[in-house]
Amino acid sequence: MSFLSGILDIGKKIIGDDTGKALVKTAVLGYLLNRLRRNALKDNAPKNENIDGGVRLQIPPASDTKIPVIYGTAVTGGIITDAVMSNNNKRMTYCLTISERTGTLLSTGAASAYVFKNIYWNDTRIVFKADGFTVDYVVDRDSNQDINLRDLVKIYCYAGNSSTVSVPEGYTNASYPLAYTLIPGWTSTTHFMNDLIFVVIEVNYNREKNVTGIGDMRFQIQNSMNKPGDVIRDMLTSTRYGAGIDVAEVLTT
Amino acid sequence: MALNLSAYKSIQTNLFVKLVIPGYDTLTFSDYHRTITLNSVSYSGLGQLLSVSDTNTSLRAAPQDLTIAISGIPSTNVSAILNNKLVGSDITVLRAIFDSTTGVLISAIAGNPVIKFVGIVNNFDITDDLDMGNSTGTITCTLTATSVVEQLENKITGRRTNPIDQKALYATDQCFDRVPALAKSNYNFGADR
Image (cartoon, rainbow over all chains, first blue to last red; front, side, top):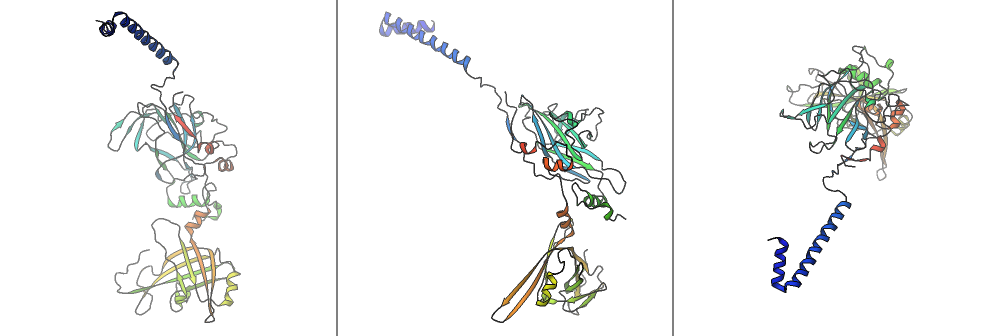
């Protein structure tokens, strides 16, 4: 027995044959109209299902932050000094300024040299792919590996200016991209980042892999200027971040 | 420098101040009860008329302030204080250790006297307290000195992450131009369009 004939039989038993048929016809008509109306509304309604609202990010204010100076080896964060999001909201490219570049070493006469020893994302150490900038996986304090960031995050390191790459320790890449080619709007003649140690980070959004933010970044950086005499002289004489005392007025012997 | 005092049952310490005022004189005085010569420098004994604030000894090069107050200054000498370049004077404070029984400097201790503070006077204050009932008054000169480390900290510059600082160093660099706008920006990272 079908659903409709069942209703018809019940109608016959209760209120007679003709009246039951009329009632059943009315019910069927109403049902069909309701289905048509719901289909029409469904076509016009906004598609709210499976829409990703994204994650609201606020860039920390940084216009009055002094750029630190790193001597020796230090683990430090950075200051966001530029950020650009792609038109589809899925890729964030930003610049983290880490440190001033220090001057020439009195002890050797060489310029300060920087090495990115380790890079950390949310307290986990990043291991790059062979190119030295694409994240392969991260390792936590218990040596557990997590591949969620794989190919979604890229970190490019620079020491000195936009054209001076600093491939992280343990990697080599002769075609490491220059900084001004990575951030939309940057050019080789307008964005120099002179005398700065900085990184450019590209994060590709992926909710399934929990890559929804820019991460808490830390960098273990080694500056070859680490001797007290070199450091004191550098702080006394630098006009960029030091006391700006004339070099001739500082006794070095 | 640490001093080994384990062999002494009782000691007393006194502070000795050397103030080099450019174009005027080098003043040396102490809170010892009489004039004494240390390292070939004679220090006038001001006793309780001199007070020196505490300082902290730190392994790190931390900035410090020191306040030196000298009471009982004759009113005729106030003009000398006002007319000379006290601010900017070099100041050195020594701590010397004496046998409290004999009042003699314990020379057996290596490093005695030891330097307590080296700095520069950066402010001074003259207080004139009048007691009308007794027709007396006390003039106190208070010197505030800062350590060399703090002087250096005050002198150092530093580039801030804003376009003004950046362009002051590199006129055509636009790297920090967007920082003020970014400071209050919100991004819906990952939001579907």
